[in-house]
Image (tube, one colour):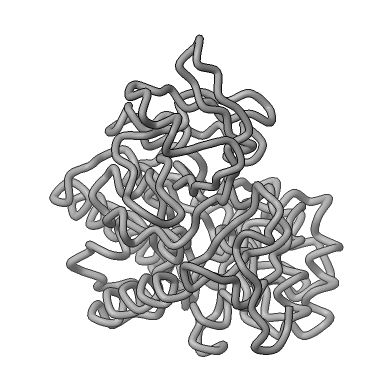
Length: 376
């Protein structure tokens, strides 16, 4: 959609995504201020938004580089003018030619490895790859220990490379999502910093030039108290936030910029249920917020307009049905068949992946539609 034309929300087919631009900008400003206070750069992770328009806001119109999690994202953002891109997932050798094509187009692409095999494949390639070694700072998902011999072995692979070179180290404190206490997040942020800085120091002592020392998750980037030795933070979900983050005290419910617009399609009074047209595909089956807010289940149901709803959740899902357990029969009258509500998602990255566009709203009308990319 282009131009100033607006359309009523009632004209939208459901389920679809609603994006509150005011909240989006406020969330971006909050992260910019937090990272700015630490004196390092922000490299927004756009795996959440997958949108050039959101990317321009998050990078202050290309002032910063970006992070992506798929080559499809890298290609999409390159097509929209983004040139400084970190592909922050360990690269498979079979994807090197595709990544090299981006470099040939002038993209400053950084790739990631945490094994000698991957590093050897990168070193043997003709393209001018810039390699970041992934460090495990306690998350246990991927990366090498900062004090391991493998770290030095991976770096050594690049010493005789045709064109590729080692430029830095990168880590991600994904385990910061496992706590709901800010003091614990601060401790995890410091563990994250120490791990990646130690890796950089060991590599430098071995004679390698390390320019990039990259850390970050949304919680650690927001609450870190010390960025000494780091060059950048990466974070992504902060642009929208979700119930997963809210349940951990990282944001407030009113900060959630993205929701799913859905329609009431049925009343099952015998089972005390209201049915929505947003099921497991529309909301995802991620229930990450349940660790600290088990009542949330598959999403919190909030009013589109009028009096707020209280304690209403999508309690179960089938493929195209969202089931809302009714404890107060008056809810059947408040939400007749055909009425619309919004669902606040558990994990917005997963939920948004089902949709091709964001519908920007001022609360009553849709002011624009922003595209997003999907796939790999």
